[in-house]
Length: 301
Image (cartoon, rainbow, N blue to C red; front, side):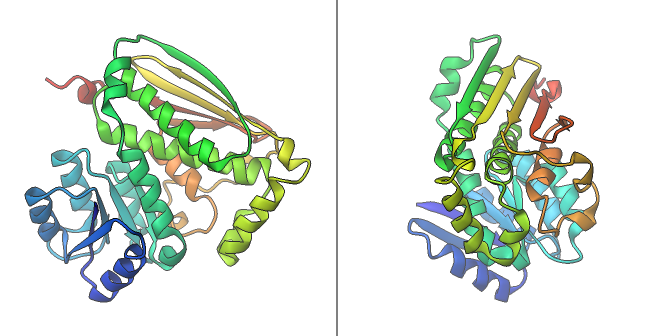
């Protein structure tokens, strides 16, 4: 049974979120009215994941993210953002939240986001132990247009990163989220050329068009090229699609709270927040992401 703790001082929003999550078999939903009550519940029994509002009395969402990261580093936190909370949401992402979902997009995005983060969080630590003696790892992949394969690759790369860079588990979880977002962007918007604006106005139509293009040329013949290098001090990931590319200068600034609620750029927002460096080639069909090791976290006194 997967336990999900929903933290929100609005009982109406609690019912909405609970109804969406309750449709998934094997998910048990618990509720807290603010961050203080949530921390008491987590200390008694750790949930698998926390979904939290940001603007709450007593202990707000930002304070809750900080406390959970400090005391329960293996418990991921997803933010539920509303208009007016953009600035605090950016701070919470920078301080350790694993992802976010705008409240106006809960029906479309909540379950998918929870599944993605849960998948990243439930790792096989035995694999990391076996790999922990390696001093450097370099790998390259060429992938067909298969969503399941993208998720599997993101998990593998996160395992490899943790093997060479043990320490902050939350940092590795965030690496996995950033990788999956980058791979999905390259898949949907790069190789398949499906406009993200379509997803905003027609959720089903977006994915129907993607499935159709997976069977049509030239989209079906395109591949994703992924390179990764891991050392004890940093992880470097390069993802290239075979689409026409785009102008990287038009990407939204992830540090600007006004961009949090924009329909486009959510993946880039998470990538730039969770990685230390994100850069594109001139054509815009290749992204390189670098995550450096926090030596203080990786080697605690």
